[in-house]
Image (cartoon, rainbow, N blue to C red; front, top):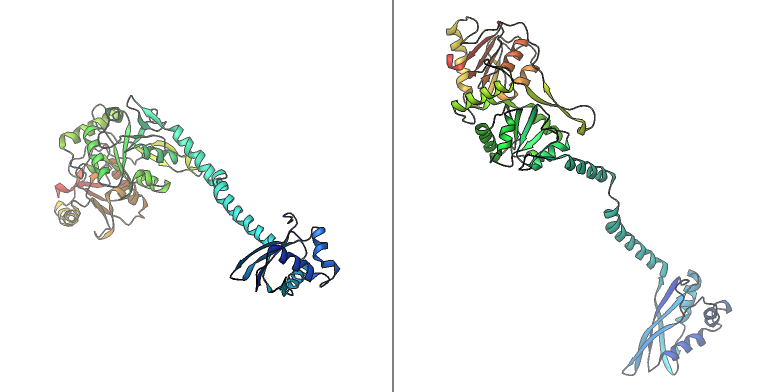
Length: 440
């Protein structure tokens, strides 16, 4: 009988006979005709008694006076001895009264077959079990971090509006479109965001905007533009930030979020673009004064800046940036121009630039000869002015002249500042000429 624990090889052979033969005839011929042929050490009877040869498996059928079949012999001998034993089978030329022929088909290495099964099973285990039970270390940390972010998200008011944990206590908030946007900002440590849930701005959010410095941060598509238009009509927002064109806030990575928030523009610079009525403009500006505690005069709006520290992203903090220190200035209201200048010259020089920039929301930086050095979007004007090296003498742009622009221009030694309109200015330096394009 075959011993599966010790079998190393299996001899596979075919048998043909010119006559009708049966299994006992084949087994008798094999034992009888190989006896003493290859020595006593390889005698089949002795090998079978010692268990080094297993049970001979013979399958034979007869048809039309001829017989054919297969012979399988398990062996625990080494390669050489098994090969010799297999070769001895081919010497059998007669079985009973019939002429017969035995040919070796192959010698199967049982261990090789087992190795293939082990490999296939190992692959199955790796694909089905380890992938599910043993995630990569990065997956573990991401999963834990995501669960913490979800736990941090809170609900505002009876309607359960999604918000970050710092919305109530923070002086400044970020208004986004939906829950997914709040979660994405939480992922990068920004915890003062609240969702409006689409174009129908909830009343609790509108009421909250009256008490906070608000940045509207929407998707870079048509839907985001519509939400900003509604916010301008029903809420008191201070700044507008947009995701890159075609992208949603929930899709942005940390670098894109920070860049978008730093490129936000004061709401007064967007009045014309979003077609805000004059009555609503006055209401927004009046709301801005009340937020800052003013009783009559205009004030400088404070900005929400998200800074990126050297530590982990979740260690990002939000803070309100204080107005920059300003040079000694004269506290007088601005009406037309601050200093007397040859108006005819100014009109001829800047009229061409302001005409070309009309409706473009762009800004041009000019040298002393009024040649264009740089042209940037109005929303990037403040950061562009901070980076100039002193070659800029004049700035002409299609936007509102705000206190922040005036302060930066004064620090950089700019002589002429021409915008579409003049916003609410508290302090105007005597060293800079400020004028609205309507006066040109």
